[in-house]
Structures are given as structure tokens and as C-alpha cells.
Length: 220
Ligand code: C5J
Image (cartoon, rainbow, N blue to C red; front, top):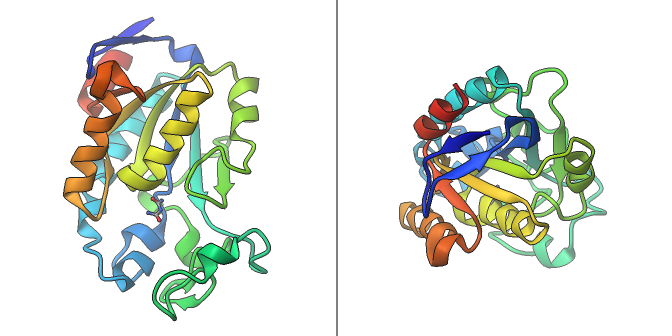
């Protein structure tokens, strides 16, 4: 067991039963000229999480943790995309529309890929999810059960959307979630800060919040 300094309190984890979940670090969300930028967002705010994520991945790989990546996106025929979501957003920038890096949020398009700096290594599962939550209509729960995982380190974007939704889903499934705050980011800094505060509030209502330095020190 190792002890991670975290909010609201330090938490012990067993690296043999801990997975790192890296959420949606995709080109369309992070790179200039992608979907996120086309919506008018400042993607450099998400870029701030890339180097901390690289450090977290290195520490987790060295400690032998299970590493899992997710990508948000849909089938090219949109058969898994609810009409209520497809018809939302500015016309021309909706799910399935041609975007600057291929069709928006469609599997197989260049913008759907994970950014090269955080590319999955061979053997690291990649979960393609049609929703914001990493568990919704995916086999993530099965993968975690098969590997005996009881604790998640969570990183990725965006803090208040896909990270939060996934942490809530995981918490309800009985998993301990340690959100690595500086490895998460949002286009809205206030949302990022509030989302992290919400996780650790009320004695850790959804889990714990730590820093990459604290996690790396504990895993070293
Ligand atoms: C994610 C989004 N990954 N904000 N998606 O958070 O739409």
C-alpha cells in the first residue's frame, strides 16, 4: 500500500488494484484548429494539463498500474448518437458535421485521435464512449473488474463534463476515485476549480483530489 496526499484526506492505495483512467485527451478538444477551438474556446487552457498527464502516465507505467484511455465519439452512421444531442449546438458544428479535423466526434476521424504526446502504449485499453461518462454503454466496468481494480486515478478533459460524469459513475459503482487536479482542465477555469472542489467537499462526496506531484511521490 502507498499513501497519497490528497483532499479531503490522505488516501491509501494498492498499485496492484489501481488503474489510471485518462479521459478524452483527443486532438479535437486540445489542438488549435480542432472542434474545441472552432467553438471559440481557448484550447491552451486544456494544453496546461498535457505535461502533468505525461508525468502521471510515466509514474503510473513505472509502477505497473493498469492504464486505460477513453475517447468520446460516435459511429460514422450516428446510430449510437441520440438525436437530442445531434440536433444541439451551432449548425455546422454539430456531432457528425464536417469539422476542421474531420467529422466532429466521429470515430476514425483525425480529430478523434488521442494527442501524440499522450498516445496509448501497446496493451493499454482504449475505451470508445458515446457519452460523457466513461461507463455509459462501454465495457469499462468489465475491464476494471477483470483486472481487480478498486481504485482509479483520474485525469483528462474536461473537468466539469467528462471527468466529473465518469467520476460520479465510478463512485456509484464502489470505486475509489482520486482525481489528479492538475492533470485535468476545462475551457472554463472557474468550472475546473469548482468541479474539483465539489469532488472533495462534504468529506469527499465523489472521491479525493490530489496533485501529480503527490501521486508520483507516492508511487515512486
Ligand atoms: C468532454 C465535452 N470530454 N466537454 N467532452 O468533456 O464535451
